[in-house]
Amino acid sequence: MIKLFDSLQSSKEKIFCLSFQRTGTTSVGQFFKDFGYRVAGYDAERSTTWSKLRFLGDLEAIFHSSAFKKNQVFEDNPWFEEDFYKILFHRFPNAKFILFTRDANKWFDSMANHSYGKTLGNTFRHVKNYRREIEFYEKYTNQNYYENLHVIDNLLDLNESHREHYTSIYRRRNKEVIDFFNYVSPKSLFVGKLEDPDKWQKLGGFFNLTVPKDYSVHSNKTNK
Image (cartoon, rainbow, N blue to C red; front, side, top):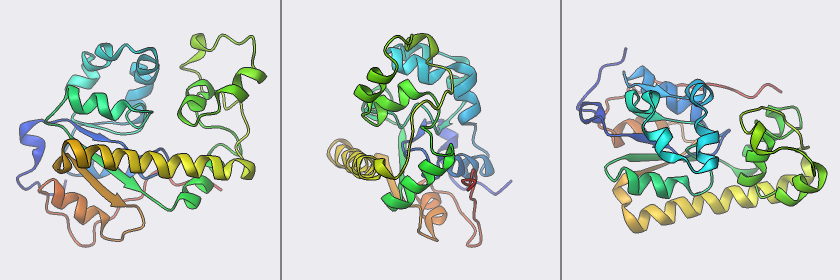
């Protein structure tokens, strides 16, 4: 385990990774694991159905769950979804937030490759995040959407014809997050670029962690 130095772990403040999926979220989780933090990643989300609870608006069920209470760092679903970051900021005013961005076109390539040309994860939740509701409703008129919120179904195509739509959402949402924290609490948000070779050292500096110059992590690479 890498040596800790005056980290936020001692205060147990919550840390939320707000980066869109396919923007290094799993690597962020591994970074904090390497520094001895308790991290809730994708497995925790699945086991506690946090995304379904957020979608239904039952946020206190998330915040009072044992998995949420025992962990300090949170990445992947549902933290990046829609405007959840605003709720998290007001619910946990001492929390810290992380936003990594990357080239929007490379991000879209990773999205399209992840599930072999299909939408990622649960399609009903996906279309809400990426504004494809009408297309979904027209194609799946009689489906019980809410009954299957926890199901990974990959129902819609995700291909080159969607590039402009997705990349515009990606750029806009990243700007919205940055603008929000610049207004309410600039010191609460770390912003980094996934392409930056010194990103982990800079992230460590934000959390008062001493990160070796040769430290690197790249988890959950896209299989092409």
